[in-house]
Length: 119
Image (cartoon, rainbow, N blue to C red; front, side):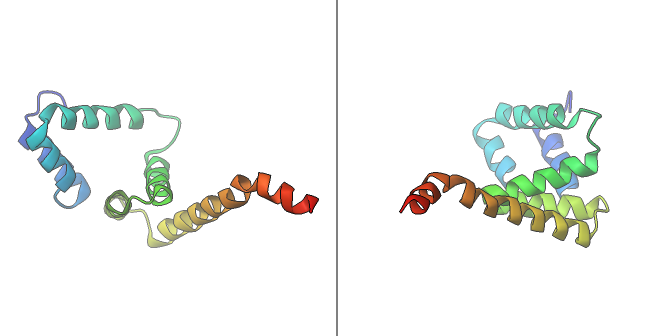
């Protein structure tokens, strides 16, 4: 993303996302540098070679869904489909995400479970 102007960066994001990156477009009007920083952070996070890009995208989808970010979940789903990740892989990712997030309820409730057990 070196030497791009803000319009080129937003167009590259639009091409990748399969639609207008609304949040980044708004942010660019308030602070262009923040958009460049966001892009640089993404490039840094995705640059490692030990985890395949497909898995990084599925992880991104899982985290977005677990955190409740509808916009990010939708964006990562669209990017994944554009990159050939199947509907079945996406659904399995979301099912695992749901299980892991649901498991945190019991984990977070351990002190309460101990109280219940003692009564």
